[in-house]
Image 1 (spheres, helix red, strand yellow):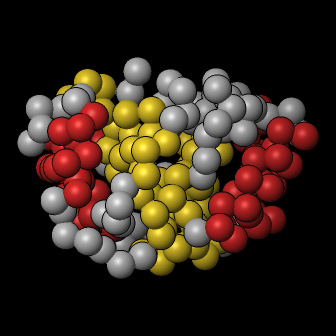
Image 2 (cartoon, rainbow, N blue to C red):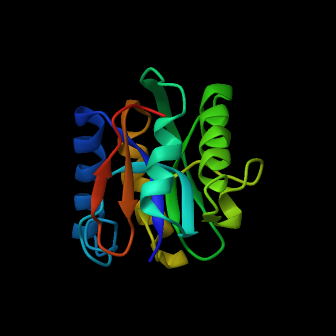
Length: 174
């Protein structure tokens, strides 16, 4: 079981990403819409924790300064080597600073941060297809580039249990 510290998209952008997931599913590509527990929501993960104390993590994050909503442009398409395909945001200095502060805050609790979320190693992404086969990439690209760019606002923060999809809203934005 892992815990993700996530920023969530505004309602309009959330619907746009979910509609893209639905089009990809109709084309036979498994997206977060149907992956595992099927309770995924469009999000940008700032930290993924392999072990943690939920209350300690929540307390540490609440101590961070409150932030304003963050405008973000989803501009491109990317893939990690293990076949995860994703929308690529323009990584502003503000986004990188928020991720670094989040990673440091959760690490202070003794939580084990996944190495890909260490400050400086993090690649910001919004997952489309978690197990994409290379022969499906042209289909994903065609559908993604029909809707990109997506202008969004990250306006909420939450802790999400990745094994169940349970969402624990945070009282303010990170």
